[in-house]
Length: 398
Image (tube, rainbow, N blue to C red; front, side, top):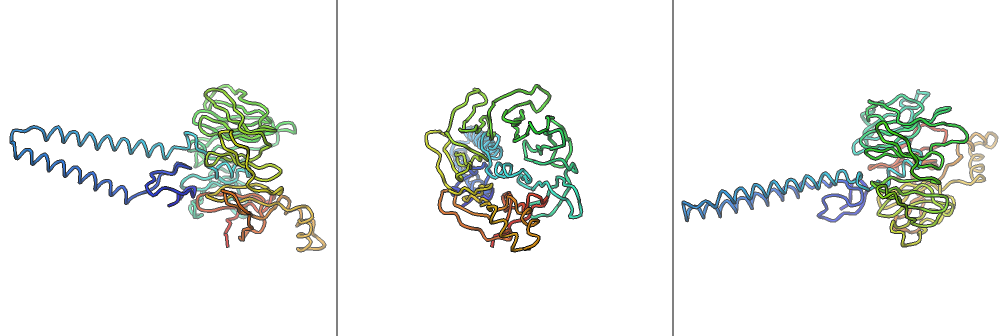
């Protein structure tokens, strides 16, 4: 049995996925449990009745009946608490690798358990992008925000956390999934010397990477403050932040305000999965245990790795084209006007797949021969075909 949310293998009696925290629907098991409780209750009642027949004055039946009711009530509370923690496990430190992968690759797509949220053209005739939502099947399309400056989105605490990139200002905002209660949290200078890199949020605190400073601010009104400096990338996972500097990866305990080095390596595009951090650098894709007791393991040796996503048991990545490959391919389309084709293909690559456990990479046959970014959700994958395109296309594997 496998988790429908993240694809991880599950034990037959699993109540929730240990990888992503998704509750497992087990109708048959619940029915069996009800039957078992009913049989136990019937059996206990039978014993009580027999005791009453043997001794009409006996008063044992009522206390036992109360104990049964108390036991059932206690079991109900335990089941409720277990389901609550299962459904909200992401709040307590589990980071969905697909969420971080999508955000690393541009943040043009986000998802929850019911819907997809896109930054793109709502209609083919539109000239500006917006934020809109659809069901997993592409139906129930709905406009969320018509703000054309929204450039990256992610789901945080049941709302859409977003960033706008304007001429001289970066803004980080929060709005409902229907676009309501839109509120700007932070405004930052946007110029050649300043850059908003990454952002995330807990229930109470906004974290964002501005230049090389990881800063924090209460979600409600409060003072902005510096948390860490010399940071290149970070992941928020419960009470822990995993971050990369120019030469190392660290974990930071928010409550203790302590950093511990995990490994020494250049690292980009951090993704947390299976108690390991996956990342890329100029040599390929690596992973390292959170314990910091092992060296980083190279699982994809490829100096042309563009961006990558982790989906289930596989890693999908783009093997970017070299300049001469782009030129040759562009001339194949048009020998005289090849420059225009070459421009469109800047940053493009072919989709490759490799088992998460490691092994040789293989080319993937799909309806998207070239892509510049990959985005995954529980039911599939989308790709951005060009850095100049505002449209995401559904990837159909052959």
